[in-house]
Length: 276
Image 1 (cartoon, one colour):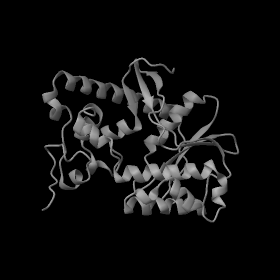
Image 2 (cartoon, rainbow, N blue to C red):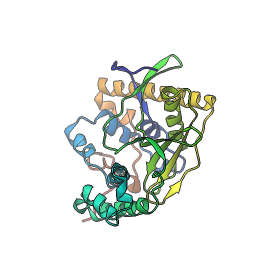
Image 3 (cartoon, rainbow, N blue to C red):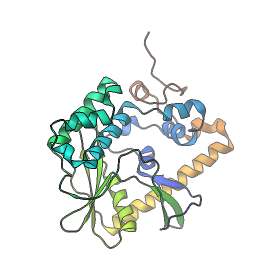
Image 4 (cartoon, one colour):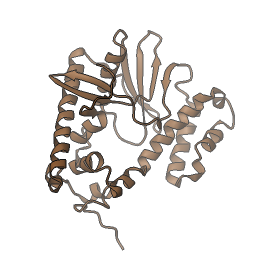
């Protein structure tokens, strides 16, 4: 594993989930969404869509920024106006009601239960730092760049590194994401024990600790390599013949799926119609 700027296929948890959805999320799966997001992202209409946060993305980003802001000045957690001060920093008054109300609930949750307050925090991300520096990984005669943004990293009392990922909404925790975090830790901190977990800032629910054996990490690494290779092959196939888009990235239309898809306005297979 090394850091450098040479071109290689890439992989990430997000890309993995776009190939194989989590258990229970199969209904929402559509390969064409990956095609729009990953391959046609520079087209003006699609770029405009991608530059707008969805409601879910906006809530997640602002919730994480709220936790970050509380720890920029820990005195806010003792200030009677701490929640209001962070809300003003986030400019929640400018957000649509559903975003404002849900993020305010997150701020209230964290103010009353600041679970990171007494932790030895090594890293806490605001969530808008941009694309993380990738790791270059070599496995199974394949090389790829692995991208993963870590929300929080803290040290347990026993010296173990704890990688924490913040969640919002109702989605279940995906164990594969935890394994990817542990894979990264194996490279970056090879001499330290590492664990991972997820915490939902809205429901205040912790996941169980995620641990992994070397065999499990090798398996997830090999899977990521295959995904990187397959996605790159499909991308190159599309670039050679753009008329093959729907065959390379087949759609899975459905009224419920299309209604909640950010690309429904540019997808000719969209099954959602706006009622008059």
